Image (cartoon, rainbow, N blue to C red):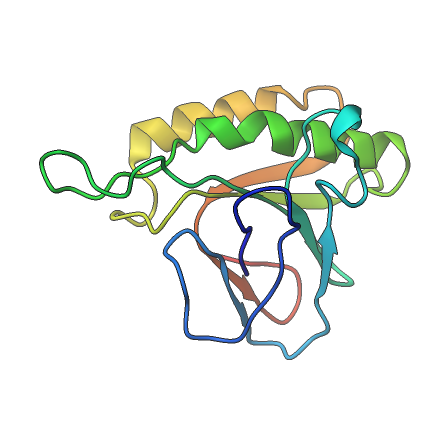
Length: 164
């Protein structure tokens, strides 16, 4: 799945991956997965910043925000990655609005994906991820949903509830 530069909405395509900032979806369950274009489709530019899209199955909602680094390579020749923290506000605003409108029900598991380029370490570096995840969870205090932030470029749809 890809979020093209400019104002065009995200879209899906068949493998192989075209860019390292794209999101690979592995549907192990063979279940129907809906791609809902959020930013620029469900919400117009005047309605605030929202995440790019939503992957929806009967059991789970996966909100996705894409961020590409301005430059792919540093002056030292190392790969450069976008900051996952830059995705948090857009994911938060979209999830909260979906909850307020009754689209996400109390008790639901909501997974937020910050898609920032293939990470060199899996999982994302420990202390950085723990701090970002705690900050993200604090943004939903008092809202009766279970949120999970993942910094990943692969979504695995498995039997039952769950992804990795």
